[in-house]
Length: 159
Image 1 (tube, rainbow, N blue to C red):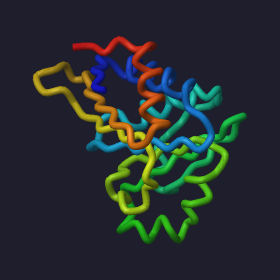
Image 2 (image 1 turned 60 degrees about the vertical axis):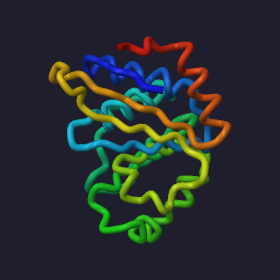
Image 3 (image 1 turned 45 degrees about the vertical axis):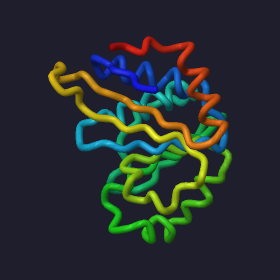
Image 4 (image 1 turned 90 degrees about the horizontal axis):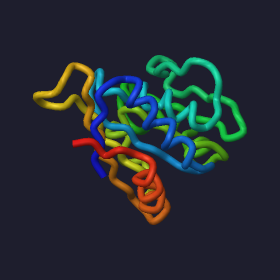
């Protein structure tokens, strides 16, 4: 499923819709360059989960846990030299915990991703406005196929 957003507010709103559909144990792997909108989308997911407070990228911390009825485990693999560094941090506790896990720069730890997760490739839209973003959702597993079907009913898929 491909979606185009035309502002950070629209990207955040899409994330909120997605967050409202997510459940404990869900994993979203975010892939995209600097400025692709990964953190903005995670801010929306947090809002959709009912979390309060401002969400920032955990680039230097690697993992931030945001507590709520359903916690959000926000990871950023940008600064990792390789997947083994995330292993040292006990990633399994988050991946298989009672919260939702959002991983920025997930392509850097692809070997650690479980067989089932939601992949989201994000980037700027060629020939689009400065704030236009393309979001390509790819489900791995039945849970995420169902999740995307639900999301389609709540989203304007854009051009």
